Image (tube, rainbow, N blue to C red; front, side):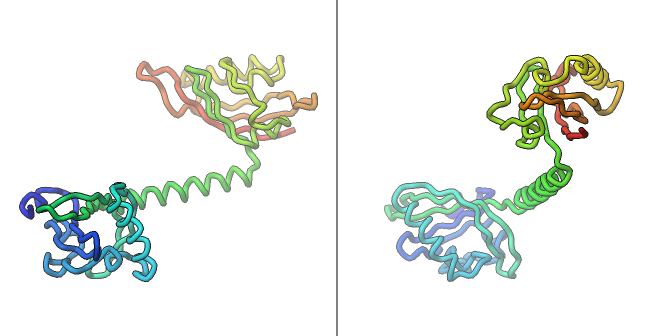
Length: 243
């Protein structure tokens, strides 16, 4: 089976389900980790972990036990090469028979680049949330084609509502609450942006608070996606209370 395993473009490790020791690996595993086949044999998942094996081994045993019970496992593992370099892999564990012997097969795919992107996206999202929180701004997303709207909690709070009390309107995200005298100029500003006459939508208008008074809003937004025909699809932006 070694020749077959070497045709697979992911690292493959064959384990003894009792001892959890490596019995065989393919060429991709050797290249990924820097071990020869002979060096890899007798290692276990704990020794390949980037974290202290005292903590890694019990965790690995749990995955192995579940796989041995016939429950395939899929998890992410921070691992290390022979030279100590750290990287991330996605590991799938499953039980199989090889030459009538029960074995656990692990297929490891490197996902270091994906994890870096996820980390960067989370950092950007966290920064964005902090900025919005600091600006005390409400956010809105609007599917122009379907009328679907998504607001954050602050958007509703500005006019005295909870998110559960806000009902979507196909005529626009705030059409139910805007002052009738301000609706036309807001729609005109949106239309100008839809036509590409301005890079951003910006308008000031009054929205009715749940308690009955009017709140002045500065609304800004931008179309972020269009249909294949070029029609505006998704628009997102912010609301700020400028009363």
